[in-house]
Length: 245
Image (tube, rainbow, N blue to C red; front, side, top):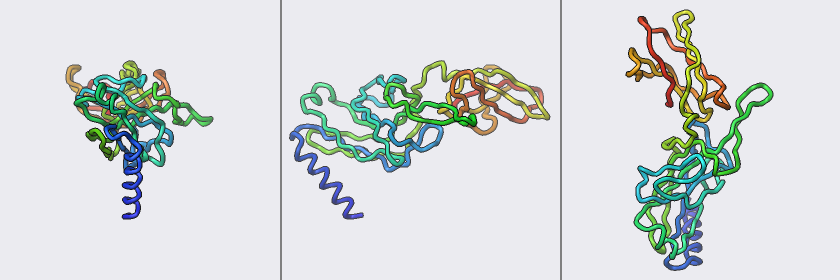
């Protein structure tokens, strides 16, 4: 372990030596395993984004890969073995002085998967190969960087903290409700396959806030596919909705 640490320090020192004295060097990695919003491990070749903002609580990565409340400075398909490997990014001093003043740096893991079905009808995930088609994104590391410094951004397990899907994809539509042998069967469409969904119930339309049953990943590859929830029927009836979990 000591030899590895010494090697890493030596590598970063070498990078610093080749950089201008007042350039910003940002080093980032994650220990892994990093996970998508549905709990599955990040695929090799998935995108990580180095971002900058003066207020990360209001920062958002959109479905086209652009950002609100800050900037996506670098987006690269670098995921390997369930994590982000060590990357050193150099920011020119003049650019830093004009564009990156008074803010912080953070690393986000993107979800750029697309879904198809195999010959047996099973859902299969692959990467779209572009950072301009983002399903979700989650922050995996934060740090401050200063002139001439090496700033480490060691991350944690990715979180589904930002939803960057198209708005219509996030509005499930219940297609049928029926009672069979004391259970309520609820079918819904327009559910994204890369998110977890759950059923909520309530006694009135304005208060449907009680989680019913376990969450599950969306099984559809487009808005016309359906997902089914089963929960015990409540005496007197109940209103339902499908929501993100």
